[in-house]
Amino acid sequence: MGRFIAVRVASLIVSLFVASVLIFAVLRLLPGGPAGSLLGVGTTAEQLEQLREELGMNQSLVAQYGDWIGGLFSGSTTSFVSGMPVNELIASKLPVTIPLSLAAFVVSVLVSVPLGVIAGVYRNSAIGVGVSALSQLGLAVPVFWVGVVLVWVFSLQAGILPSGGFPRQGWNDFGGAVSALVLPVITIAIAMSSIMVRYVRSATLDVLDADYIRTARSIGFSRGGALARHGLRNGAVPVVAILGIELATSLLGAVVVENVFALPGLGSELLSAVTSRDFPVIQNLVLFLTAVVLVMNFAVDLIQRAIDPRLRLVSASAGGGAL
Amino acid sequence: MSLTVKDLTVKTSGGVRLLDSVSWSVESGGRLGIIGESGSGKSLTAQAILGLLPQGMTATGSITLDGQELLGAPESALRSVRGNRIAMIFQEPLTALDPLMRVGRQIAGPLKLHTTLNKAGIAVRSRELLELVALHDVDRVLQSYPWQLSGGQRQRVSIAMALACEPEVLIADEPTTALDVTVQAEILDLLARIIKQTGTTLVFVSHDLPVISKVAQSLVVMKKGKVVEETSVSGALSGAQHPYTRQLLEAARKVTRLPEAEVEN
Image (cartoon, rainbow over all chains, first blue to last red; front, top):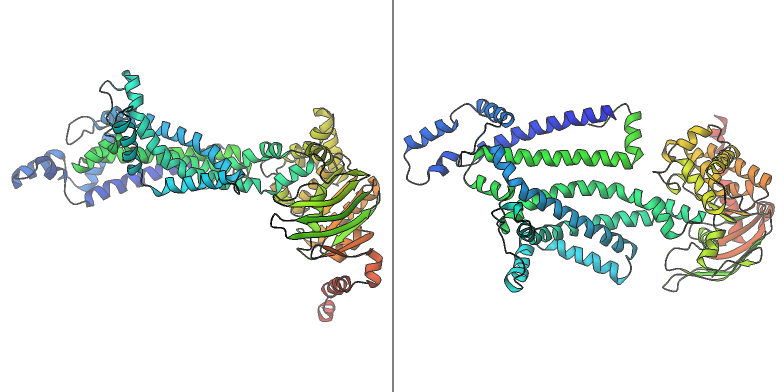
């Protein structure tokens, strides 16, 4: 186990390094730079050059990369646009994005696990087919369109929820913050549940048809008893894998949905940073999102190993872990 | 403890007859073989006896265990029969056991359901059962997951589980088909020995005449959901009446006879 964790942490660090290089390189390959977008139309070549110098954009790429990584750890990197320290800027956006994506994740788990099990158990009846059809529909419609429809129904017609924005006082205005997140959470949860229902359904079908369930019934267990004894744990293995991916997806979903609902979170910040070519903000934000996704995958691996002894014991007897 | 199947007919929800008036009987301590090609309905017969037909299938006729009607009996009554009075072993021991549960807990399952044994009693009985099926490395096996055992060991575990509550009838559905030939022979010997030792009634389902002839006395030959011949194993081997039984015999002889040249080598 210790060895497995060591190997995985090492691979996490390598992945983050590769990701940082890619993020850095891709930004430099993009047309347009921060100086041009900061100064706007009608600036002279001298002014541009001076700003590039101030922003450190005239240094060699290696030096720029070194500055970025150094600043990442010391916290000294500042935004090109606002001059605010980037790490502080990101931290100030977390109270919107983290509750949004976590709530969306929890809601979609609570919705999709029971619905997926129902769709599997009653696969041949109207209710099972209905759930499957619903999830097809949820998959087919774009996320932002769902957001727009929800706004139209609940904000413009019913007038019970805000159409966008977040209270100025943040979570100090608890009621306001919660009602600001309801529609965005539902929007992300609809998209996520639609995918997860299908995975849970197929895991349920696998378990229902499994030979060990038949064996348990031949021993005298009831259908429900056999499923509780053998089905839950076996069904959990593939579902946990997909939950990990979905938790990451919910974070990315938040990035899109924040823009639809004008929420001041990481997503809106990222979009405005990209528009203004605010390299330090983009770099730190994307690297942060990458790190979150990688850490989640790591956590999922650990949970899966806890559930499934095959992952634990096979890699142990093979002399270590899989890289 | 006789097991009697009379006019057993199984239909799909669409009305297709998968079993058509199947009738046979096996006396207490008897050893019945059911033989037929795949799709002949032999496994379906076994499932119908335990009341575990796939969803949508319905059975009519009569299945009696020592005079007690099982067909149409309430689920609670069937559950007290399954694993307790009639037990079953399956073809593929790897998938028949739960990969995420240690062997010890799986063997304890039927004992918890059908006996009043406490934890210590279950532990003692589990060890006895593993000894019975000649798994001598008891501690390791109890602590193992099914996939950590060999195919033969897994099937021994399945047999131990089936025998846990000393059932009156043991139904073995192609229990050696998934095993390689040497292990097959070991498992057949083991089954034959245990059946003799415990006096359990055996219903042995197989497509393989040489395999069936090692354990069974009487023989039911099935084809396309019907019983085409009821005979004894020795009868079938010496000269079967029904052309299909003769076909099975000839096929078995062809397969088991090695080409001359290879034998000389």
